[in-house]
Length: 639
Image 1 (cartoon, rainbow, N blue to C red):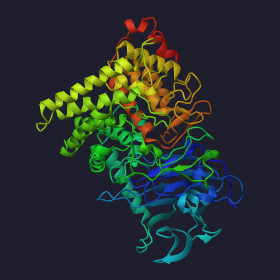
Image 2: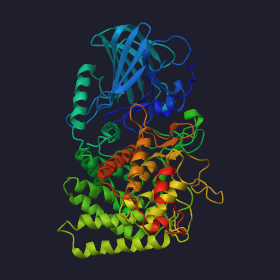
Image 3: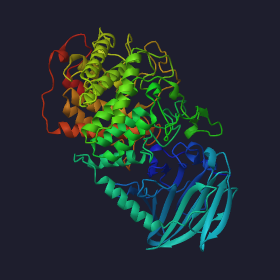
Image 4: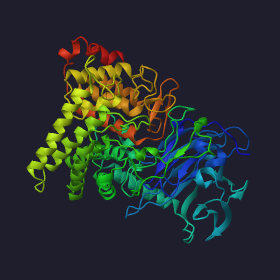
C-alpha cells in the first residue's frame, strides 16, 4: 500500500518551469505536482493534494524501510535560473541531483520534459528512482511498458491520448502502474533520467541528451537574467522573484497566477482555489513589474496575448493560457486535499463575476510598458478605446471586487479607484496619439474626474476620515493602501495618512503582515460568502511598504521590507498567504502576485533610499477624530 506520509510544508517545495508548464519538488527529491502539457492540464503527479497513490516521482538516495524519505542536506538554484541542485550527505558519500525543465528553443517553444541528473560528489551512493504516474489528478492508472530504444532502457506509460516516456536506468515493475530503479553512482559519475510527455499518436521521441540540455538551459537563463536593470540592495531577492515570474509566463504570452490548485488559505478550510489560469489583473501587474525591470520581451508577449484574446464587449475575469474561458468549477472528490483541506477544486467560478478593477490594472500596465520602452501598438490603443466605452457604462455598478467575494456585489471603493486609474492612464496614453482627437482625451479626463469625486464623496467614512471597503460601510480593505501608490490622492493628504495608519493598526499582525480584510464584519457576518478565516495576504504587506513610502515613512517602510523578505523560503519563493502563528506559508505556491509585490516594494525602496524626508507632521497627523496615532509612533510600534 502507498505510504500516507504527512504532507511537506508548502514552503518546502521548489519550482521547476520552462514557460510550458511547471512542477514542484520537495526536499526529499519528490516531484509531487506536475500538470502536462499545460499549466491547467490534469496533473500526472498529484500527491501534493493527496498521498503517494495519487502520483509522484522520487529520485534520492535509496531507502528500504518504511520511514519518511530523508530530506536533502542542502539545496539551491544554480545562479539566476530554475535549475535546482539538491545534495545529500550519506554515510557512504555525497550525491547531487540536478532537476530542470529544458529551455525553450529558438522559436520560443518549450518541450514538455523534465531532466534529472544524478552526480556523484564523493564516495559511492546507492540511488533509487520511484516512478508512479497517475494521470487525471491521480485518478487513472496508465499502462506501463518496458523496452529498449537505441540500446537504452526506456519506460513508457500510456493512457488514451497521452504518453509519458522515462529514459534512464532500467526500471522494474512494482505495483500496478509503478516502477523502481536502483543504481549506484561514484565520485565524478553522472546518470541522466528524462521524462517526456507527448501525444500518443506521434512516434516515440529521441532520447534526450541531458548534458547538452543542461548547458543550453544554463546559457538561456544567463542570457535572460542579464537583461535585469535592477541594481538595488535586494538584488538576489528581486532576481529570484523575477525568475519565478518568468516561469509563469506561458510561451503563448499569458501569465498564470500560480502553477497549483487548492493549496489552502486555511489548513482544513474550504478556501481552496484553482489559480492555474491567466487573470488579466494579475498578469497585467506581472507584466508591469517585468517592464520596470527591463524584460520587455515578456511584456510585449503579454500585450500581444491581451489584444488577441480580450473581447472588449465581454472582458472576462480569467482565461486559459490559450485565451479561452476556463472549465466550470468542479470538485475532485477522490482527492483528500492538502493536509485534509477540502474541497479540491479545478476550474474557477470567478470567471462569471464582474470585477471592475481589472480595467484599471490593464490600462496601467499598458502605460508602464510604453514608458519602459515598449513601442506603441495600434491594437492596444483600439482595445483601450473599446474598453473605455464599456467601462463608462458600467463603473457605477456594484461588483465582486479584487478579492472575488462570493457574497453580494457591492460598490467596492478599490474597484472605483481602479476605474479612475483606467481613465487616467487611458487619457495619458491616447493623448500621445495623433489618431486620437483632443475631444476624446478630454472626455476620458472628464469621466476620470467624475469617478474621483464619486469616490471621495461615497468611499470615505466621515466620522473617522478613512476610506472604507465599500460605499456606506465602515470596514477596512488592505487594497486601499494603493490609493497613494496609484496617484489617486497624494501621500500627504490627511485622508490617505489616516487610511494607511488605520489599516496598519486594525488589519496588521504584530509581525507586520496584513490581512486583506476582516473575514467577519462588526456584526459577525461573513462578508465574502465563505466559511472560516485565512492567513495574512502576502501582497498586502508589501502594499503597506509602498504606502508607507508614499506617505513619507521611509525608515518604517525599509524595516518592514526587511522583515518581509525573510518570509521567502530558502530558494526565494512565496505563496499567496502566511500564517504568522504557525510560521508557515499558505495558499497556492508560488504566487505571481506575491512575487511581483516583493519586486515592486524593492523598487520603491530603491527609489526612496537616497531620499531623506522629514516625517509628515501636518494637520492630518494630529487632527482629532481621524483615529490616527502620531505618524512616527504608528509607523514603528505596529511593525
